Image (tube, rainbow, N blue to C red; front, side, top):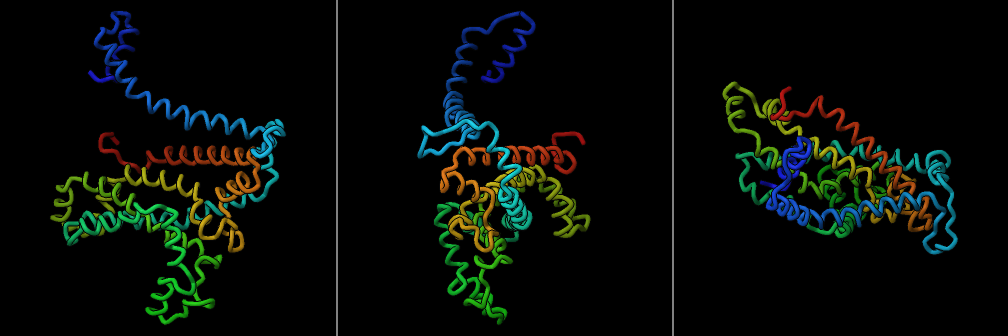
Length: 327
């Protein structure tokens, strides 16, 4: 009997009032709690308590350099963020705009890459899987610095290749200024996002390998082509995996911070286009030391993420297919 079965049995027996757990069942339950206790303690110490503390900070005018001068101001920080400070809304709009541009492209590319890596016709696919996954093992800051050179307007190899292939002037100050042109900077960040498709590719591959091959064989006999099999069989059957990736990607997009902070020094350049919500949160909290205001900003983003996640889960029943459920 497992720990959870023992707990269920305990609930049923208590409800019926028939018997108590035996000594062996109690020992097994205590063993299960002992194995769970590190996770429970970690959750309490490193997640729940900091969240409670940050909510408390949001009610104070608090500067960590001057803790004795902290003043309770109620929900003034929240009112400032939601009503007074226009930059909060602007930074959130920039975040959503970037998410709308980058997320569909990256999800589609990751899925397409996983489909190719799952195909029997691709030679050496295990080697390619390793190559596509390897960049995710590089520390993110190091990856950002590498892409700072790749996207350089003077020496970056992307501009060199574009100029060589098309003949369009791409190198130099008159060329493609990926990180300094407000029309190009979001696409530059999207290209950087391709660097980390390895994780998503592995998750999609796990879903693809769970699709029965008999379905593909039957569709091929009926004359269905590759694209038809992809959109009529593959995509519908892995919608739970797509949904999982979508939720994670949306939350990650809302928290987008490191690339604009490193590539554009957190200044919001060019023309404020990269002053995303989390960049603004960081500036308020750790540059201006408005820790109370920063805590309010963090809680507002947490609530927004919860609402968006609830909407995604609410709409999932209309397009996510679970084979174990009756439709």
